[in-house]
Image 1 (cartoon, rainbow, N blue to C red):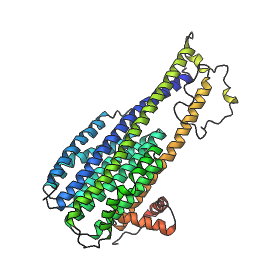
Image 2: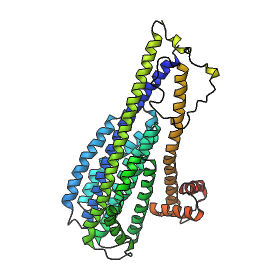
Image 3: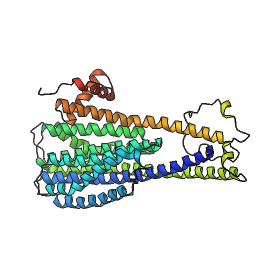
Image 4: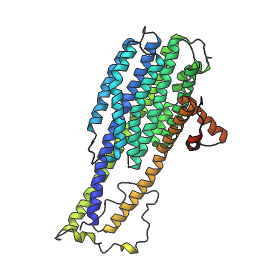
Length: 434
């Protein structure tokens, strides 16, 4: 019969294999972040090009397209490195489905660029097309965060996801404002979208900083100093206060694009720091777990010396408490963390103590993971409620979000509470036009 120690060793080996998969996923997430940044800039330049009726920004746009293509190749290589063996990756079904959808979008990207180059599409349709592709890529990050089983890594992934989403709203703000300035006239729908993008990016960035490490939060505070944001705020004021139909100075196109780009480039530095921190955490977890495995294997070697079979290793050493006399609960108390807290054990520690520590650690990891995933579940619920309002009331995404936010303010409730109430009323919501 296999011993308890042999199963502890198997658990460590399985954990190492899982951490190796998480490390590859984290590398993929970083590559996606770099590609999204490039596509956001490409989208902004495309809008400037279209808004100027093809008279300006053509060379800059093509240069950016080349950079995006290089980063796309990096993402596709990262996709190729993922293990798609069904026996090993059944829990990643949704992740692989998201990747398949994102690859479809990437394969259609040359056609989008062709339409932009020939000015077959307007700015609004172009923004929507790029946004759809970027959302497909961000959905891969979402599923990566949702499938991560290590709470610290999951927390970093959720923070990273919210940061990327906030940065995407900033990119859509840049693209929409670029089109408005290039066209020289304000319209109501675009102005409402700008207000939605500004509010949404602030909300996502707040979630990120709530989950991020103190070092990341400090970097974000430094990036938000007034002298850094003042040029952007001045340009925002022009766009947000110009009445519908009012004239905009097309000469401000460059100033707007530059102000937004400085803001987004500052966000890119923070994104790089988040990605590096995530990679570092994966490496630390792998190293610590490998040390634990080595210690357990040494113990197994010591216990097995001079014994004909592994069966004897299942008994406890004399200094350990009896299983039924151990009154301590298996749940891990708050404050006890992951690797390095009790698993680099001396030879005389009992197998029971090892098993008990393993049970407590797994319980703690499960509790922490539930807390982190609550953020993802709230996001899913809010998005489903928005989709329901859009379908039943024929609203745009911005209008649906504004409606839910107003309901939350009027009822003095959280947005998630309103979203749950909307979903609960799905069967009785009126459909406009009936």
